[in-house]
Every structure is written in C-alpha cells, then in structure tokens.
Image (cartoon, rainbow, N blue to C red; front, top):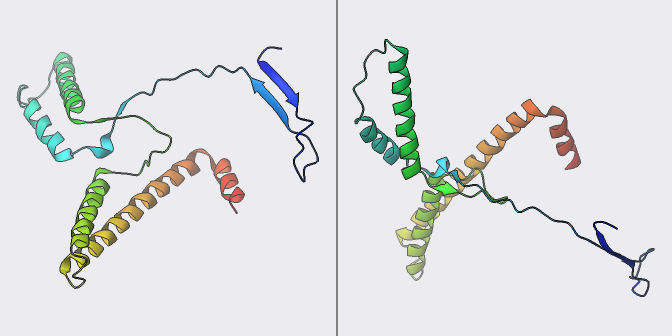
Length: 180
C-alpha cells in the first residue's frame, strides 16, 4: 500500500445537500525539516553608524596609493572586503525569513511608527483637554506615518511588478486576469 495508511468512505455520515459521501484518506508523508537560515537584515541598518565604524576600521589599513602590482591590488581588495564583512557581522542584525514578512518594511517606518505611538500615548494622557496641541501633533504624526507606509508599499509593488514583467510576462497577465 505504500504511503496510504487508511482510506475509508463514511457511509453513515452523509452531509445535507451533498451528492456524495465523505472519503477519509490518511497518508504517511515525511516532510523534511528545513532549518531557517539567518540572513543580514540590511533594511534595518543604521547606515550612519555603519559608515562611522567602517571609516574607523579602514583607517587601520595603509593610506590609499596607486596600485602598480596585481598583488597590491589583490591585497587592497581583500582588506576592503574583510573590513566590510567584519562591520556587517558586528553591526547588521540577522533576520529569519518568514512567509508573512513585509518585504517593504524599513527602519524609517519603524521610527515613524514609534514616534506616532509615543505621540498618541501622550495625547491619550491629555484626553480631557481636546484643544491641547498634543492631539494635533499625534494626527500629524499619523498622517506622516500613513503616507510613508503607502509610499513604501507602492515603491515595493511597482519595482516588483517591473521585475515580474521583465521575467514572466505571461504569468503576470494570468494573475491579473484571474483576480478580475
């Protein structure tokens, strides 16, 4: 019988309005467990801190000079790559891929969201004073966050659709026709 462990028809359990009986099938399928690989999350990097650390790290190497020999060029490239990789390992956080990840989410959106939530919390503390400027600041922060969110989504989907059109002209049109 192989992978099929059980298969039976439930004759004593007809469902109303159905023209067939339920069939219960149980298979013995081994789903291989795949470890999630962690990757650097370059969207959430504080690039100013990254550049500052990289500048400090690069100052340890010899000053730039014309590279006359292939060996000198190779050494300079190796030093640069090692510096970038060291700073990436120490500065860039790792992320685990998730099927529900919002690929368009960026660090500035996180900061805008935190600011908006902080201002709304402050406005909530002053809910008995509806004319207080904190309420207007919270609304302005919400509008700014909402606009940035819409722009990030639009940019992601515009770039994604351009890539999709370049790769799969036929399948993109199928998806769009199926949604109508």
